[in-house]
Image 1 (cartoon, rainbow, N blue to C red):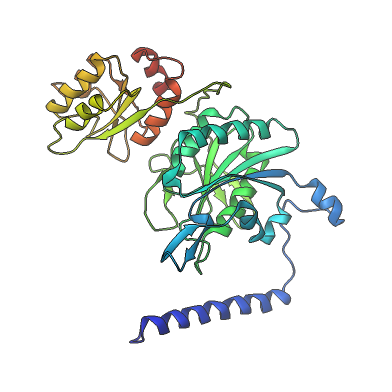
Image 2: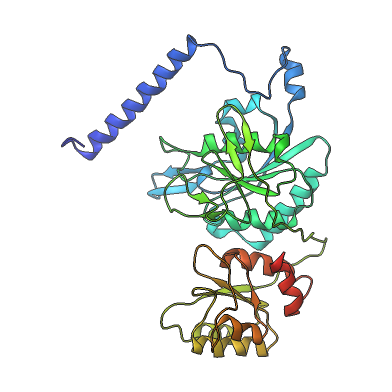
Length: 377
């Protein structure tokens, strides 16, 4: 910048932001205090008692990451309690409890942790004093966890999943603002009945519809086809639509999730990866990320038929970002030919969410026609 060295530029930027912070503090001393809508009592003790109770279930991720000079990068380091302590304004929004479920990058998220999260969320939301649950999470697999919770939480009370694109130790970390907004949404009476939601960058998105669209930008979670549910603005939480494509598959005490794999189609795909799965031990289901409307190569079709011949369910999704899969095309490898051998169409679920739904649906049936009803809802 302007011919200065990177080190000097870093010092300049740090000094600039410290100056801005100091100026904000000085200006705030001369301004009337703005009270959030949820804190209206004159007596502080009464005010706190009237606030809704929200529970944070912390799992790790970038929102809880700091730079580790010894490792030369960012690592998950902060607990859920530390995340809350970093946002003093939360005390004016809700009474808060926190539980640490895990502390991992979300690339290491597992179905076992999903089951723990869902069961604990159901337990908490069954309590009359709990208004909502917030799950802090890494953004890599956040949309999958959110959809799993959408399918398995039985309460009408809100579940909000939140993360950050910038680690906590970065000057421009988006974590504190996202966490504040997530808890505001969880405490909002309007959030009831809308299922699990993702709240980041001031936007509220339905778990089924939302996807991560950028590796680095803060406005990464978007509902590309149908738009966000609402916003968490500076003065209030506001909803503009309600998700209609929702269903619940309650967990039992002994629910165990099987093994479901995803295989991507591409130019030159010859089915060897699918055949390789058949030689690597038992698996319970397969999701194929097809091309276009959900098509596969002729060679891949032959491999998928081998999977179906063994009675293993296969769901056809698409690698395309928006739109439904369809049996419009004919010919070997088309959606029509795949349907004829008992493959299930994923509708507009992306491959990773189709896998989540298949994992849960397989706890009830392996019949392709019955499985299709879950994807049609």
